[in-house]
Length: 469
Image 1 (tube, helix red, strand yellow):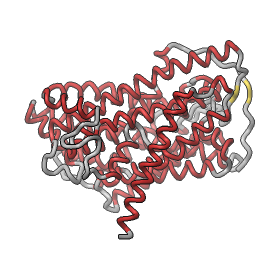
Image 2: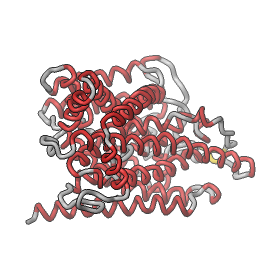
Image 3: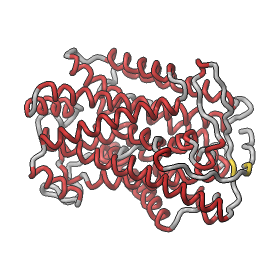
Image 4: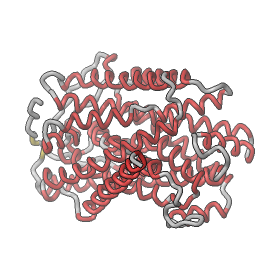
């Protein structure tokens, strides 16, 4: 690995208004909408009821604490956490992040779910060909955009601002007072005949749902790249990934800058920190939790314990059919269409985020061979490699969406256990004392670290014991 350049030194910029900061959290929220929010939690609720929904709130809250520590480092240094962790933990760090980014997310389960719903809306039989066409459309959208970050932000904003109100209206129509009461009890961990966890709950799926209660896996770390390209804090001095087809070039800085912790700079930092917490709290935590609760409540009201939801993604289709019967047929079709669009948007941002993280880590691993000015080329290389892998997986017959989603989710939960500890250690040892996390933040991230580690270890041991029985 070529040596990373030392940090420069610049003045910490003043914070703009809160309104101008809104954006990065829409991408990371959109990444979660199609996995945990629309698939795994509603799937679990449709089988086991709302008594488990407390864990969805816990999961997205843990991710909020992790995400803010990811943002803290980049806000203060203007470089990605991948650069920071390579400085701290050594030469193998970028290779670890490339592997744990691409491998768990290479399974196109979310896209397969979208393709299943597209087929239903169009009234045709599902085939892997539909998923392959969607993958090619995805690649085309990225290839036509000018600034990669702006493409992702605009796309996810449109989906969320359209989708969340639509789901809210449908839920108000279908949910009865008894359903709302069950939701309130479920937030407190009280289910039908159990407290917190039912005995028959598949723990691997539950762990996957916890990992996807928000974004999940290394996708949380992509927040570091988004806020840098949005110009948060010291990220003001970094560049953006420009589409290689435009012919335009922009100076991209891999390494960041520190600043003198003067009273003015510290005041600016605290203003930034307060406003980005509000931005992420409103867009990611509050909107994400609200959407998860709505989708879980909708699944409970429509298909709880209905036949056919035990083993597949059929519960979303069943929801659409019931919504059509309870309102009018077009409403059910619109629900399935919106669900398909949200799932497509999730896979869209997943592949974009993966390509962005993998390309950054490729450059970090060997700056002499892989030049930072070629980051746009590496981005599109990794993007199309993922699309090609997705095409191969779908063409090979791996078309059951739920199995693909759960496989990726469990791998991502284990990854989250590892990096949540790393990012906390990085911020506690690399940042100046006034910039470090408070005790409250330390407890929040430490809890997530222990929770993911303990639960992930338990699931692994449980499955190994079944193998050797």
